[in-house]
Length: 209
Image (cartoon, rainbow, N blue to C red; front, side, top):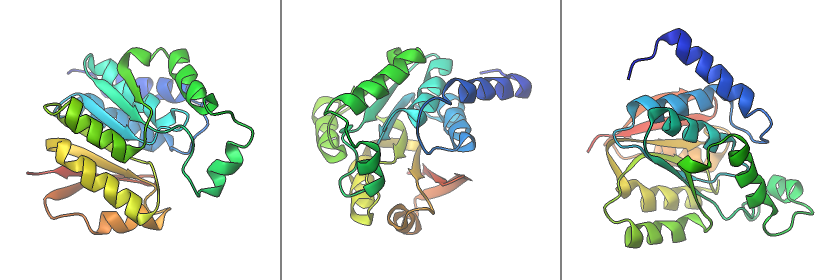
């Protein structure tokens, strides 16, 4: 897949410019890393995103799939906010049940990315069970973990979803080191996961077996 560095730089700049209207916490450098991982390095073009909010990280992942020319991003979220997180509660104050999801989907439609995205509107553990039942042979190339931030939540997401990640696939943890939960999970990663990158508040691992 040929692209020179100037073309890549221009493409990354364009994505950052296009999605600037989406409220979220992902740094553009982290988004650029996700894009390149998905487009150039994922062994299979299937991405699972745990926690999508309004779609800021989704837009980077889906842009990578779109430019790769094949694949799909499965965006998994309840679109109800994370229970117990005060910031979410404040930001969603006054929202009706479907409003956050509608905002997410509207953002993806505005960016012309809906063809590359399959929203799954359940919690991450329910989605894992459904994935095993409905897509038992579908291996994941990139898993982005950004749902609950408590240690037990992150650990359960990792334990439930990592078996579906193909050998040489990637797992990225968001909110490291900002949140102690995902940070603790990162420090406890099994030895067959090799750390391959860090970006602002993200750590990436490659599965070696």
